[in-house]
Picture 1 (cartoon, rainbow, N blue to C red):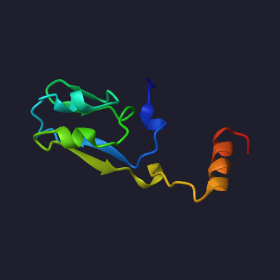
Picture 2 (cartoon, helix red, strand yellow):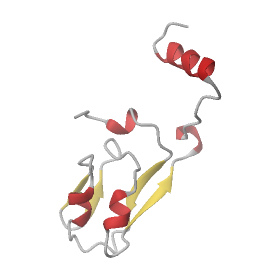
Picture 3 (cartoon, rainbow, N blue to C red):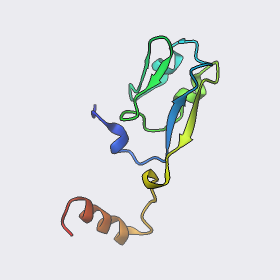
Picture 4 (cartoon, rainbow, N blue to C red):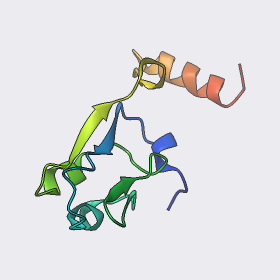
Length: 96
């Protein structure tokens, strides 16, 4: 229901389509729970909606979709402990 679920769900991966292998069968569209994939001539993944779950990868009969790791600045490193979790939340809310 969110406009950009990829900004809310912490993941270090995103789906990428190899255009040469895609047959536009739409199996990935049916499998994607985030409505992140549209198909015209080939599948296209919306990076704002893709949460990197990999469901589309397992469904593609042509192996045209794969998960790629995000770049260093976009990688999510989970907090070490509860204190670090709350400290991070306070920073994100502008309270620190």
